[in-house]
Image (cartoon, rainbow, N blue to C red; front, side, top):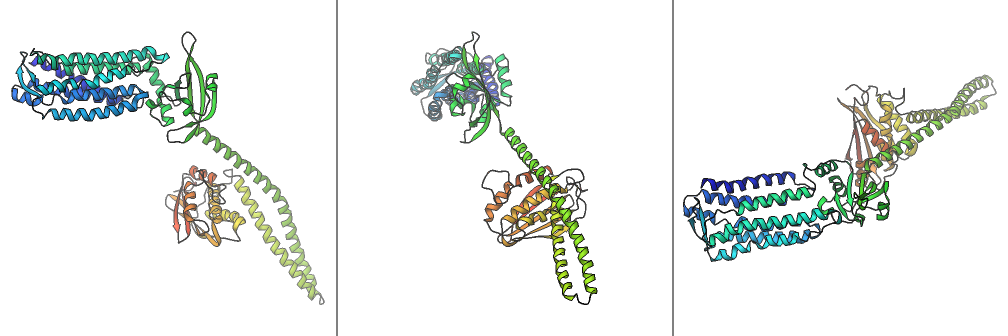
Length: 588
């Protein structure tokens, strides 16, 4: 008996080994989980055989034998599931049949354990074990378990052999049919026919089925070029690790094979891409693909209905005789490239604006300097004239005229001083990060941003500083000033006339925080807040005065800062930015 115990034990080991590897290897490219279910069935079948072999009491052996019908009945549905994975064009239909068959087979297998008359007795077989004596119900039940395996073998003959894979497809179909017939040829005589004839023989059904399933497992992976021991398997593994998507397409546009990256880009399982027309995935005509493309920009349609920009290249794949057998398509994701291109374009525009602003500021600065010098000179001369007129007893009325003129000159000087300060601010913004432009005290950073923001809505909205805490100089003050200007302008543009925007700056232990509070908002607060949450980086309906938010977001990211939003009162919005002091050039 000990010798015959090794037969089911070996079947259990084979099932456990191949079943475990099937779980580990299962992926979008290697659908081996269905094979794992098949090995679970053969392992359970062998386990029941092992228990009956090791049992010395016929009554207890009969109790174990009651469950010997469940696993063989489940082999058929799992085998049909394996065939469904091999036939993409019929997968949905076969998977439905496999599910229905699994439910029916499970119910019958469990019911057989409790139906009287399935197994009448266990008698010694002369090999140290026991042989079942089947009852009338088993005469119908056991042949019923062969229906689904035979159906799966028949469906395997419907594997369509492609012109470039005819030998492989035909061999795979032939191997599966032979394995099914081999397993049934071993199982039916030893499990059913010979016991009915009362011919003593070891039960070999689980042993034959597990080894036949292992042969199918190896054949499927070898034919799909997934075994690393083959040159094709090495090539397949290398293609799977590439960053670009690669697909082999038939001349009529049907996808024949693809690597893992291609499936990830489309958002579809790799197995469902097989047999799909390439035209449903790309906006590229087949005539252009057949002629050969080189980095053509197009759109890829993903599974969720969206599109992503890609670069498409193609070349004709030929056989050894030079005959065209397909098209190799290479797909590169352009999202990162497009984002970099947009960033460079935006940076170029900002640089051009900076150069233009610097040029305008330079041109304005010269006449401003002349006007300021002339006004200062005129103010001095008016003072001298007033002294002379005042010394003349008859010059009382003229003194009043000179005083009014002096007042006008003083107001003009204040205005020109404001213009000169704005020119200085514009020149500083035009040279962000330049030598000598960085070091600023916190108050000048905030005031400079507010001064420029007042030029737009200074008469309608009260822009004020409420508190500034922290006197250390900020080396990256110009960058921080540009971020503040963009935020203040956006808030002021969405504040009601007569409202206010308050700014405060505080130096925390590890960061510098600037808070801006706008109240009341003239637009819906939820809409304004949602737009600020994207910080000018997401497409959508822009808020007013949003020009510069995107570049401000980039500057804030470079400084390692973060943006926070909160409600302010009943109809206001509070925006805070926090930047590490080390990034601003301030000792933490």
